[in-house]
Length: 445
Image 1 (cartoon, rainbow, N blue to C red):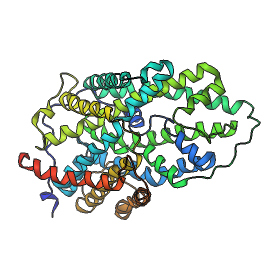
Image 2: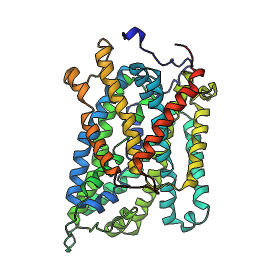
Image 3: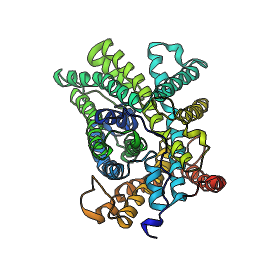
Image 4: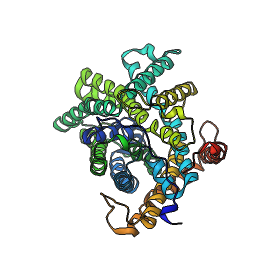
């Protein structure tokens, strides 16, 4: 098939917002789409101990994240279209696979997005214990979702600028905690060695390092995307690795035993090092983490139904934009309502299911990268992955190897009585059915 016959997504016909997302805002938004700070790493420390945790958190992104960062840098700069990864896969592989990419990404969001309002409520409960009693947590979660929907309707620039401030407020207490841990005399106790569950730690680290491609979906609203995307991906990668490794290295120096750590143990460490005030700051940071991650991911996921509607797969209402902000308000509202409905399901962190579904979508993106390098060598690429065509084609081997490990691990576990691999396969099969069910509404291209 020649490049002239490759199906292409329908471009947006509506005017875009004049005020766009700049480099610092895109770095901050990507930080929240991927990480949101060290919250969530408690299980890695508990499972593997200090030394193995630090090695896992340094080595995992080299195999899992750096290839995705390079992919987003090249395709985000070459094809800065609204919908991001959906547009890339549709252009390279055709409408069927473009639809599967969008479906898998939105399906993965179901296992992600209920976590963040719940995290907000968990840390709010440290200030106000009644927050998690009865139905209070559900209503507070709904309020968080509504607030983020309103924030997103104000536009991508508002979300990006807000993410910068939220990131500073979140990371400040951890910087202070690390400094105190380094300058204070270490505890006299000896931290006992841990029988490390390396594979379990890697699975959690993969979850904490995934989501780089989410930044691609707002390309139509990014200032100078050809230059901004590569720099933003690099900046966010450095920021995230530092926010993970430095606090852990500081606690290792101080000698806190993490053998019994669980979600929320960062607060206990902060109170031990800096007293009640620092503990309160880390609690507030946990609330900011939940709010900031949900807010940034609403920005990302809401653009996928918008792009699908422009291609004819969803009703035209998903293309409705709000006033001056030009945000897809109808898509934001529908997505927010769907995620709010999932709060009552009480999702625990379904790491394996999330990783498997996201990983399938990610593999489609790597295939699209290779196909576009092969089929469209003359495509203008302001940033080009070093090493030529062979490197671009083989870039997905590292992430694929980790996904194979996740697959092996998934055979041994059950989540709420369901094998994660079986559930992931059923979700993927549903995407095929939905494509043919919705195909008659596709616009000719």
